[in-house]
Image (tube, rainbow, N blue to C red):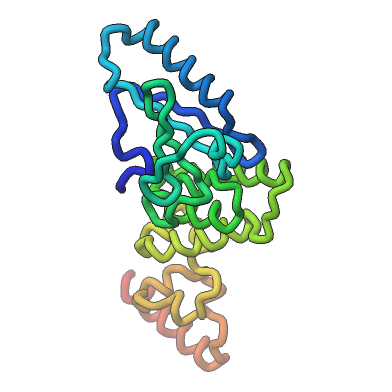
Amino acid sequence: MDPCDGLEDLRPHNLLTYKSGQESLDAWAIEELIGHYVNYRKAFAPREPVGAFGLYAVTTRRPRVLAGQVALEAVKPGVYRLPVVGRTVTLIILREVEPCPRNALWEILSFEAAKVFAGADTYRWRRDDHVPILEQIYQRYREVGISMAYTFEDFKREWTREKLAEMTPEERLRGLPPEERLRGLPPEERLRGLSPEELVRSLRPEDRLLGLSNEELVRLKDLLERRTSGQR
């Protein structure tokens, strides 16, 4: 999958500051980012050239105060260049980036319910057990008052249906006990493929005699007696 918008040109060393929907990306946040960059470079990569470092400021909503203080150079929807003291910070505004598969991660962090679930459904997760992570994000959004008319339970149901459609019949049945596999099937479907001998062997002796008339029972008794006599 292509990188998210704004992260196409990652360097050997990258520093990022993130402001959620309840925080504001202001001049002080940019100064903090520059300060961390200086300290990091001194401590871990003092001999690296300036071009080996990338600085990124990711914010959920547009930083209107900052935009009034510094000229933002638009690169693409939601991505800007922010010149600061001889350096350039890549500014990424999550609510403005293009909604597409490569920006699925940005949508998850957008603080907008519809985008969150659209991104979660599109993003290629590296782990199969990512649903609990999404649930924590969803619960956090609810705690801060973000409207979630489309519930996490709705998402799990739709996600499960989509994943089932992609699975083979064997994968769908894996781990299910026999009674769960057969539930809902009519009797003729359950017995399909079994020979008469296999069906008879599966029955208890008393069950094998069910439905026989007295006349049939007498004939069966005579047959068994003749066979017994012939084996002596």
